[in-house]
Image: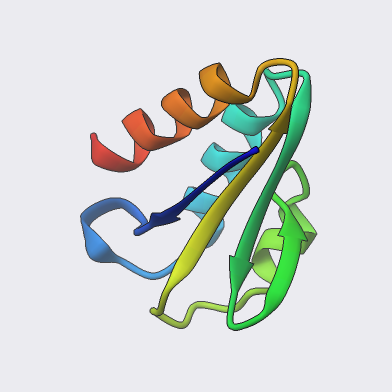
Length: 82
């Protein structure tokens, strides 16, 4: 299992656009991809789940577990840092 802190692009809070992009990236991989914020855990492959986090800034954690966890985490971190 990979667990690491994340910040959305340009330090901006989560938006519909960034949520949709994250869902597209996470859905490409055969593993569980979750985002945790303020003790709330949501599936990163679910647009509704991500949007339920709200648009608050704050500490978020990426949790990835499964067969392609390393590739998924790398792709998500690359997108976040672009």
